[in-house]
Image (cartoon, rainbow, N blue to C red; front, side, top):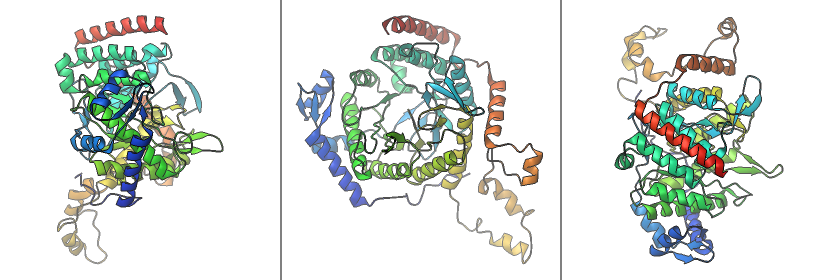
Length: 491
């Protein structure tokens, strides 16, 4: 099927209103400032012309520094799998999905929750390997057999050993980042190869509003030495960590994106970046973050309009739901927010953190059945975005003339030639049976079909086979053992 560029992108605010949000963000950066609890980072901002209060660790960023960095930022964000397969390049129009990593697993067949295990992580890798639209795989869950301080290192060992997709996961401390970087060098083939291959990314999440944790800045500095992609993830929530208004939330979110982009640029001017939107609304009666509310679609489109102003690819938190089941509410909320985001020009649904596929409810846990359903859901959405060609052949005048009045097109050569490109076909989840056919096939729900597909994937894929040379596998496992020994004792 041909891939067309959308002739127009969806907008929910005017260009003048985008400019007002941009100006408000500039005022936030200069008049309020950002706390960077790291001396080296403060010095970088000061050298670049920012106003720095070393005692309070607060940086105020002038407009000319923002404009200078926006003009020079690299806009080629990409990451690659360890086995040399095709990289993810955001902004190329090829839509893709990413998985998530959560502590808990939800059994959607019984609607129960439990802690994840290493076995679950291996199952997640197997499913990611099998699905077409999942381009970024994660550890799927945090193995409860290990203390959290060492779990991230172990997850990266499993991912690089067995995944045929680009990988990512949470990194919990500057010390575990050291082990993961050393592991990445072994996988890539050395320091210089790591700089070229970019098989590792970091999710740098500020603490909204307008501050960072010290370990986040330490990890950013470590990754910058290798020019590895850093993904910013401010999660401003309306009425809690941000203003209750959509415009105010976007202004604060954009300020946090801008100070993060400038931080990354000052660490390494060649470092690739991307614009993300992890904003959410809040149910102020329950004080609960909402993942599938209608505001999610509006925030997504508004953020996309801002990102396009800066010439950046965009991704973030959509295709989520507040439902704790695979039901109508889940499908409706996920489809609505994803459709709006893609119509506005998003390049990936989610990336690192919540906003990726498989999440049950507002962060309740993870389900591989849901991953399988959402993989097919993106195939459905991609068909809509590919649109259709209008030309002499596709207008089909000769076919219409041949069929004539009361004729039939089913056996025509024109139909055979175009049917695969024009009509989307289900991969088995969105099954198109009439009632009699559905009943004869067992009257299964989509959850039943996803569970059957999961069992088929696991039966065909497990045990997983390493994608790396045996020596590399041995070396990274040794690093993991060292990390577990050190980080477990320190926790």
